[in-house]
Each structure stands twice: as C-alpha cells, then as structure tokens.
Image 1 (tube, rainbow, N blue to C red):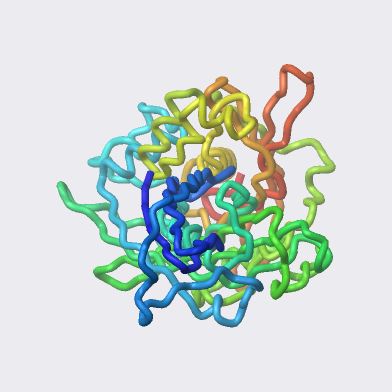
Image 2 (cartoon, rainbow, N blue to C red):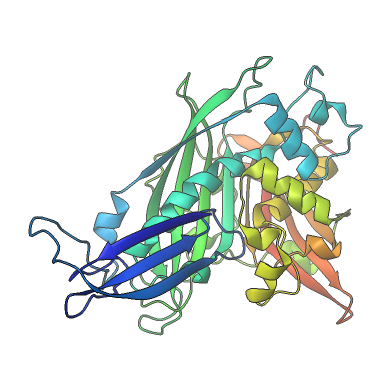
Length: 413
C-alpha cells in the first residue's frame, strides 16, 4: 500500500480536482499498487484546507486530466521493471500452485530435473502492471482504479527459466507497452475500454528473452473517445489458432495479439472432455500465492476488503487460477514435462474463492495442428467450480488454449 499527500493551490490535480478562491484542496490518496487479477482498490480522500495558500510558482506546470485517449502517444511509452528470483522463489511458486511436496523436480533444488512450473512467467508481469495501472490515471479519461479488471491473459515461453546458483539469484527486466486500447462496445456506448499490454521479460546477464506476456484489462465505465474500434469476434486476432502462441520473439509494441478481442468459442467443448483434473483450493494457498507472486492486493486475503468490494470472500488471484489450469494440462498431456509447454491464453471470467475452499476442475480437450514447420498439440480447456448454493457449475476460466511441442515424441499419449 502506498500513501501520497499533495497540496494543490490554484492548480489542477492529475485527477481533475481544482482549488478555488485561493483555498487549496489537500488530497490524500491511498492506493494499493499491485496488479489486479479480479479488481483493484484505490481509495481517495478529499479534504478542504480552509487556510489560504499562496499561488503556485509561475514556472511550475501541472498535468491536466486527459479528455480523450491519445493512442499514438500512448503506444510509444514504455515501463521497465527490474526483478529477480531465487531457488526459494521457484519452490514457493510451485507449491502455491498446488504442486505436491513429494514431487522432487518441483520442490528439491538438487534434483536433476528441478524446474519452475511454466506459468511462472506470469509473475514477471505483475510488478510491471502496477506501473501501467498507475499511469492509466493520466492516460484514460475518468479512470478509477477499482474499475480495472484482469479480463484475459496470454503467455509465450521462449526458453526455460535458468536455475539460480546456490545462494544466488537471476536478475530480470520486464518492459511493458500498451499496444492497444479498444472500445468494449460500439463507439460511444459507454461500456468502457479494453487495455492490451505486452510485456517482454529478459535475463539481465544474457539479454535473452525468457517470455512474453499479454495482459488484457477491462476498464469499465470510461469514455472511449480516441480508442480503437471494437474488434469483431471473427477477426484473426481472436482466432483459436496456436500460431500466436508459438511465433518467434517480437517487439512488445506489436499489436498482433490473440487477446485484442474476446477469443473465439472453442469447438472441442461441444464433446465430452478428454481429461478432467481437480484441485481443492484453500485459504493457505491464497496466502502462499500472494507471497510467491508479489501480488499483495488485499482483495486476495482480507475478508473486509472483499466484502466492501461486494464479494462473499477474498478472491484467488487470477494468475493463480490460470497457473493451476496450466499445471493440470502439463500433467495430463505432457507427463509433467514443462519443457514441452509453448504457450497459453485464456479469458478470466469469474473469481475462485479459495477462502471458501472451492474445488476447481480443469476440463481438457486435445487437438493437433501444424504450427509452421513444427507439429504441435493444442489442448483446449476451461475451468469450472461447483456452485453448491445454485447447484450448478460456474465457469471461471474460458476459451483456454495451451500449446505443447511435438506430436510424435515421448509426450504423445
């Protein structure tokens, strides 16, 4: 949590509040600077200071709140976040996704096959998204933090995470760029916008790209003037093809993302799932994932915060739910070999309440397709929770696709 206090005298604050008649508005902002997976919370307290203040210096400039979305200038901006991880980071992350303590390749650093679960790449996007979220106050008219929700996610893994040496760490840099802001409905409909952020993570020592995340956030209730038109669901950007998950590294500024629009419905879900795996969540898992991922949004741990936001209990972080689904797919169709994982994309449609011990099921369908010169397997999936109160299933992750290498090797089932 960060608290900032600013005095504005005869000037405009970045949130469009004004001082009048020589009396300053004293603004205190309490903001939880952690990327959201289901929501963000930002609290603004506005106090009027009745004591007159002198005018602001003539050479001092203030940023006016935005009145339109200026896409050309937004697309040239970038935010870079440094991070690092240790052996303990990898073990904690694996356990936070439900890896059993007896699975030595996931929990024992001296095991010859010790590795991170492939969705570990999502963690690097979290801190960088905190910077992007803060910047949106100055980029989107009427932006309010708690109306920014994590709606969809894509991850391409380009190489395995290096294992840190004993007592050491691997240093990373993640660069985020907003590649598009698109209207959520017809222009002027007032449904808000989708913000597409591409995040590229490199190893500092080697300069090699580890992974590329694409994070789609829905910003509700803001004007869409200046945003791109809504993308049709028939667009190639919403195709279920795996090519977008397996293409070679490119600049994060590229706008050719499968998440620019709602992914197409998956045809395989019309038949009975090929495999189903289940995982029982718990309050301890939610707490462990917060520590392992660095996502300290109180919405994922504090019942009072969740209640104030209108939820019955704290929400499991969306990237944790997605990571559980990826783990299930790798276990079911790659015999646990994370090296076969190439990429994933999915929509995050409803929350999981780990505080209530909900069980999440991953329903999976296997397909095969050609990706360039490489034969790949596409596993389509969705994740559901049994809503005991309603006696029906609640879909929490939809339109999921995981791409695995090869169709003829050891992982062929």
